[in-house]
Length: 260
Image (cartoon, rainbow, N blue to C red):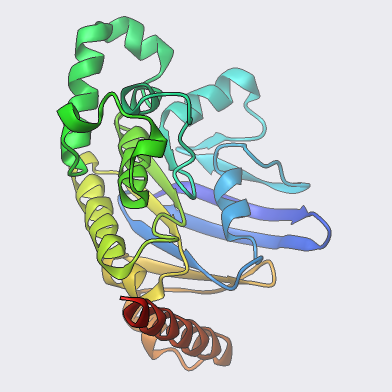
């Protein structure tokens, strides 16, 4: 059963970014969304919770329209969704505790009380391999890039969402930290039983953890299938994208090794 349904989405900025995207994300699956830069992956992700409004089309989350349900309906949808922003997007003036606790809605915080909020924040930090006593009072500037990514992940899952959206969660990380974040994504998905959509340029890492992969190019869905089907595809567009991406990743690893 589809938990997220994208229907006929069109969005234009200086040029068309989405040109009629139709895509279903099944309940409980992890879908990797890949494609060249500027082809609408992050834009599509943001339409899921109404951060970007398309000119045409709609998104349904658990059967509810994102763009035709009114303000209260959109708020209800957003409570079902955790969002991991690119570069973590932590608030610089807030401590780790304050940043992570933002992932629990005001209504739920009032319901469960301050003590339970503190317990949940500490537990979720442990879940992403951070020691609460060492990081709770720190500001984002005092953390490494990998730690900031993990705090962003903790904020997205502390509210125990049904859906988690990841926008380039390993961008800027070295291969070791990228692998660690991918493991945490899998563990979080299994722990929550969540449906996950992962926008990424790390093809190798994504294919290792996802159930299906969607390729966007030119604002359109060009491929949808399993990782095995993606790797064996004879479609020229898929082959060209894989070859180009793998070559870029190898070059990046070689550069990293030469620096070390």
